[in-house]
Image (cartoon, rainbow, N blue to C red; front, side):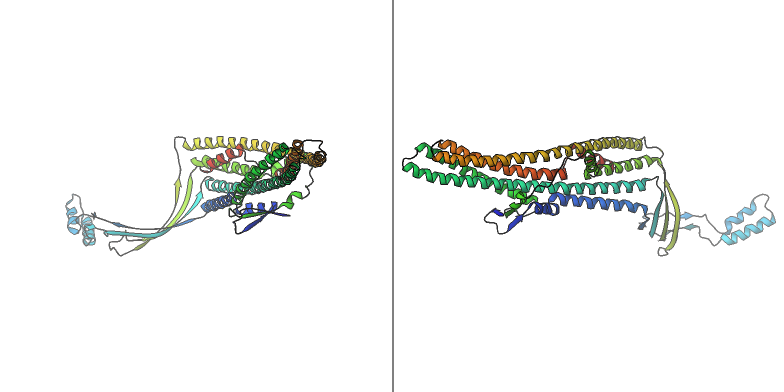
Length: 471
């Protein structure tokens, strides 16, 4: 059976079912889309961390202009200066010959050297880390575990969003079924009022009976108006959550409410433990803990040296007297960077991360126990909801029978009009309660399957993990 209820001015209708809303929420809701972006961002961070293992190629280019240029002075030059050395005491004839030869050789060299006014430099450099004390590996490990934690959180988000969508859907159906009961009761009172009007005109009943029925009828009319508005407002909220246009007419497949309940039995301790181990939020905390431990190792390696190899090939006129004479310059080498003293900063950072690690371990342990207790409580809630449903169905059947009896007694003038109205109001209440009890039974089982939980411990753990990753 399809029930139509929505804004009459809406051009397009939306057909929803308990499964359809889950599909829409998991594909279109804002929290899921935001979570997907978070997963993509963390994966990019892990990919970026991996590139630290690889060599880096960089290009350099520059130009330097000398406003005031110094020269390199080699003395006065020429043979005259050298020949003066012959006057030194003890100079032999052989020494004199050598002095003459040197004077002849250096006599043509200029007294000074001046480089170009503009120095050009352009080249490529390849740098490859050789030893980093585990910094690169642990940096990649931290980023990878952060990505895994985000993926697990995303899976948990999808599961929780699906259950939230079902809650919204079934609450909407509950309002819709309650509105149906109100309308049915209002129609019943209208028929009764018309009948009693004729009886009053015939002198069969007194005016008080007619007035009591009219008051009850007006009460249900007001309740119906309020519930219509509440249903429209709630429907818009549900559409917004599902990523659908608000104001659209909603069609509900209410046959969902009549489907047989899935079989259920109280889980054993082993079943609970298996589900606890498989929890996505617990996995996310464990990945965050691994990431924090990797950050701690990075901080612990702060006092180890870092060694990198590099090779540079460039062209420059720095070693030429002609500005346009570019010469190739090739360099290979090793660089060592070693922090010997930093006033204990790295040590204190590692100690801080160690405390965050202990905090996260406590949060993980606490969340594990919370999840276990939550699942046990939800299993009990499923059992309780089914027992409550059985009682509600029995009560509704009794209320129907009581109304039939009240009608007969009222026709026989064995009871007052007030008692008849109370019987009808009782049936309305029991009908609404029975519908709600069935919805509660359906939701209780779905909640047990999903076991959503947004605990403070989890939030604290995520905060600690994020703080550690920032290191």
